[in-house]
Length: 413
Image 1 (tube, rainbow, N blue to C red):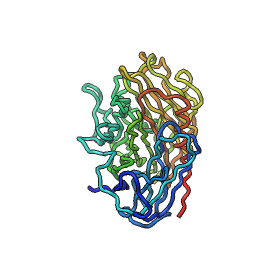
Image 2 (image 1 turned 45 degrees about the vertical axis):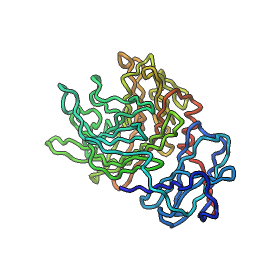
Image 3 (image 1 turned 135 degrees about the vertical axis):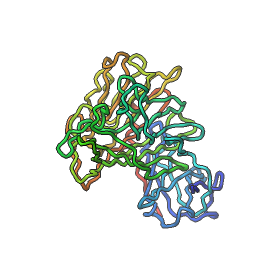
Image 4 (image 1 turned 90 degrees about the vertical axis):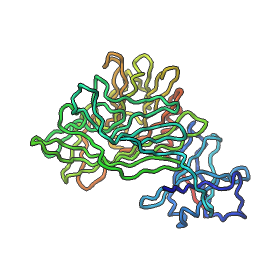
C-alpha cells in the first residue's frame, strides 16, 4: 500500500520562486505551550481542492521555509493534520504555508502492523500499543466464560514498560484498557457486559473499519458488538460500538506520546438501551502488576489523590508509579462534550486489594443513567498522555487545555 505524506523534498528552505503559495496558516498558541507537542488540524477542503499529490506544508520561521510532516485524512471531507513542536514555548503564534508541490513518498513514521490476533502501533523500533482482536481465553482452570476480544494490552511507555494487565487472578474479566458497561436495561432485561462470569453478555470484536498510518499518526477503527445472552440460548446485539484509536508521532527528544480513544455508541436492535447508574462502567484501565499502594500515586484535576478520588469528578487524572528502576504512567483526559462531564471517577482505594493494586475508570454512569435512543450516535472522547518520568498538575492541566481547546488557526489566501 502506498502512503503519500506531505514531506517537502527540500531539506531546509523552500522559496516562493520554487513553489506557489496556496494559503498562509497561522496557529495561535496563546504563548503558553504545555510542555508537550500539540497535534493540530484544519479542514483542507475549505482551503483548496487540489489533490493530496500536489500539496506540501512548510513553516515560515526566521526568514526560512522549513519542511513540516503532515498527513491528510479523507473521511467525507479532507482534514490536514500536523504537529506543533515545542521548540519555542513562549511564542504566541506559528506561521505555516500550504504550497503547491509534489510530496515525497516515504515509509510511515507511525506504523500499524497486523500480527497473529493483534494490531500493533509503533514508532520506529518502539511498540506503543497493541489492540487484540482475536478472542483471548483466561488462564487454564478458569471458566472460559471469561474469554474476551476487542481490548488494548499492552499499552507501553516510551521506554517499553507495559502499563496494563489482563486476567489478574482477582478479576479474570479485567482486560487492560477496555470498554464494557455493567448494568444495562435492554428489552426488559438487565444485562451485564462487564462481569463475564454472570454469562449475561459480552463485548466482541466484529470487524475492522479502517487502518491508518503515516507521518503524523497511526491508528485504527474497529466495530465492537455488545452481545446479550438470551435465556433461551440465543444471542442479540444491543449496542454497536465504533472504537477509534489514534497515536500521534512522538517527539524524538521527549519521553511521552499521545493516544486518543474515541468511542461511538448506537442502538443495534431498534430498541433503546439504558446504561443504568452503577459504581463502574465504561473505559476502564487495569494497571500494571508492578504498581501497588506504596510505589504509585494519583492526582486529579480537582486536586484529589488516591485517598479521596473515588466518586469525585475530574477533567483529568494522573496515574503514575515505579517501573523497576524507572518511573512512568499516563494522564487520562476527558473531553468536555462527554456525557456527565466532568466525569465521575471509579478509583480503587488503597486498601480495596491486599497489595493496593491500581485501577482507574472514567465512569459517566457512576451517579446517573444514560439512555441511548435508536437512530442516534453517542460519543465519548479520551486522550492518554503516556510518559516516562514524572508528571505534575501544571503540565497535566496545560496538556488537557490543548486537548479540550485546540489552538485557533487563521487562514489567509
